[in-house]
Length: 563
Image (cartoon, rainbow, N blue to C red; front, side, top):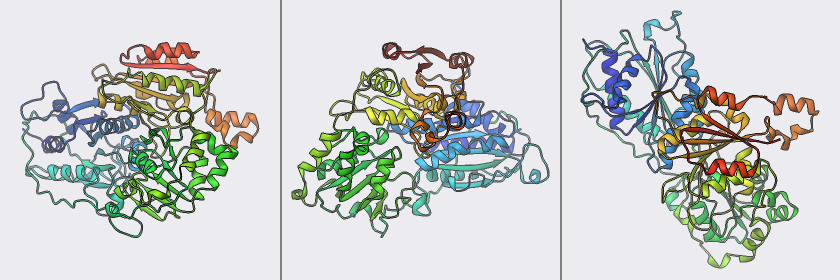
């Protein structure tokens, strides 16, 4: 005999698969049993007749699992196949553990489907075990949400398909009711299930068709209204600067080169290339010569979301004229003094309205001061970052013709890369991914695992020891699960050394060490052994180079011990 919950779950999974969902992360639990049984069949090596083929990933910890789903989605986008990834949890605190990943996905524009199981209406508000207020729990961090009533006996098909259709479109930004919702992001379906929750041995069938009332999205507009594709060209000034933040893409390089302006590109911008790029811009802006150049800037163009340096933020804050494009998922949350804010880079920005306005001496002055990053020496975070880049550039981590791909933690390592990473002049430029939506260290290991699984190629990751310890559970891959090929380089300098460069360092040393640096004394090798992840400790540039040159087999940790 078929169970209503089981029938609904099969239809939902089939409808999601039909709409492009290929990967699902599942955390164990009883209330989510109907979805778990359906996914066990769809995720089997040979699914039953009529069932879709789903890439199923089972994890114990919901917080880490949320970032695994985020990494899978980021990896799919990096491979040129953007699509939502779903994650399934049971009720209670399991749902709350998805909030950090939902927040990051919201701010960075990553499509996630949060499928959380819940008690039916009659068991809410009466003290039932493992029951809380799950509807609306993610607040403004989701593009759309629905509290779905429990399936009823004898109900016909179609409801689950309609939910899947709307959820996927909302996650992809195609179901926007206003311009702020038009970017991809997370969606929450809170799914009530009534007992029985077990498998019923029912048959799979094709989900019913749904009449799709597509809105077509909302055209990108500037702050005064209008279509970005028809936006006016940038004003022709001689002394402009282009700042490329996270996710800017190659359009930032095109804008800079068209106008003859210097390009200041962060490592995860995808724009750190070309003759206009100033790779040593951080050191330059901190120098007297750089401050003099910054004071002479007439116009700043920001593409993507820059978050790494205070010197760049100061340049943006005092810009006499500011134009912003593609400023993250919440693209209109740009500095208030911007003259125009557009969702994507208009084509008109990529050509100069007045070629005669180009001043070659302006770009030459920036290149003279910041054209070549300093070569790091000794054994420190910058040297480790340089070795990391060298390993990527050797091409050992992707297939022939694919750009090198890596995940970078949002703390000291990405800032080290920002100071030493050269501009790509030719060949394959590295693709660096980082969780810069909120720039937190949470879930970095799981994100890297997800990227490696999605791309199905070896992936390199670089992070600090605190970032690694914060998500060590991301190393856990069960014996029945598909294992990624991932090599994690951990800069172990004994705590949060990033604070040494901030104003907090002026406090008494004992206070700084205890509440900011937070030395941990953890044995990373023993920790890795517990998770059955390979581990090697290196203490020199030569040892690190040898470790990075070896083929990647499974999940590996290279601990670069500093000090």
